Length: 170
Image (cartoon, rainbow, N blue to C red):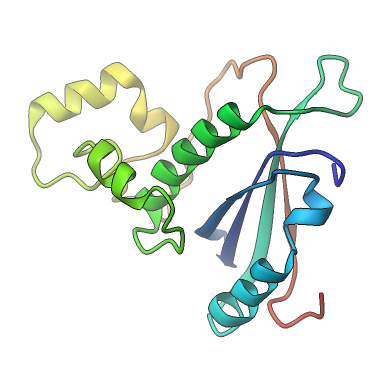
C-alpha cells in the first residue's frame, strides 16, 4: 500500500473513539506524501500536544484482481476528499483542513452534513430516504458505533488504520 495513491485521514484515538483531525490527498505514493515535512510539522504542532493516540487511515482503490492498487485520477481524488471532509466535519467541526472550507459551508445540509437545529419530520424522512442513519449516524451519538451497509460495493477503497505515538520520531 505504500506505493499506492489515495487519501489519508489523521485521527486521534481515545478508547474506541477516533476523532478525525485532518484529511489529505496524495499526488504521489503514500510513503512519499503522508509523512512529508509539512505533515510532520502538523503532527508535532497540532497532534502531539493533544490527548490520544495518533492514527493514520489510508484509503486506496484495490485492483479487481486484489493484487495491488489502482492509480486514482486527480478529479476522483478531489471529489472523494471533499466527501470525506463533509463526513469528518460532522464528527469534528474543528478539523484542521482549510482548503474547501467555504465550499463545504455552502454545500452543508442541515441534519445531513451539519447538526440539526430542530426535530423536523421532513429532515427525518429525508435522512431515511438517503439511508443516512445507517451510514453515518445522527451526529448526536458520537460514542455509538455506526452500522455498515450490508452489501458493500465491489471495489470499495481499502482502509488500514495504523497507530503511531504522537511523539515517535519520524
